Length: 290
Image (cartoon, rainbow, N blue to C red; front, top):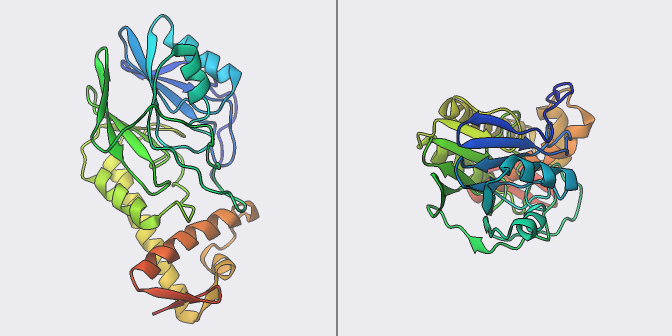
């Protein structure tokens, strides 16, 4: 488990990593959100875009408004619809009259324990951005970059004036993304990582964790990590068919019990991808190599 840094954290305090970007940390720390969700305000002129307004918490909504100051909020963008990212969109839109846009609406039944946030049922976008579409304001423009995998509706947003990319949960500054079937898809996730690797973004601003100053280096290592995990699964299956829980003690020696469910979901996502590629099959909840 990645250690969360000791308090105090800058919760609710505006920080400016660069002239066009202001960051506000939400008060929702957890083992899966790190110190909390980072909301970003983009712009330095008369208006602002808000990216990932975060959880519906009154103090966080006020912190966003305070960070905007006299500037008008004219766009509210969401990378995806997990409950730590989009629930504040509706109340923020009500206060500012700004349209909600970005990812498509997505609600998946939550039929068991999850290692990430469940889906936000309140999200209703005024405009869904397709890959390559942009939103513009006073001195800023944000272009949508479709990155399905963590969720099928996940988007990143490229700030064209500075070369920054807001990566939501696709690439984070503290941990790898959790891929939870059936909506989370490992094949899509790896394809999206490769898509980002082909880009030339200067810096990533994730929703959780520090900015990524060497984005291509990190993405390359993330792809390598997932391919290594895939090979490990295939080696493990050389011992014979296994049920999903049986992979964990073999593949994750000394794992914190609190992370076993997350590990199972990661392995499951890999197995589904391998099955699609005709490298494994399953029968009666047991998996075998082909």
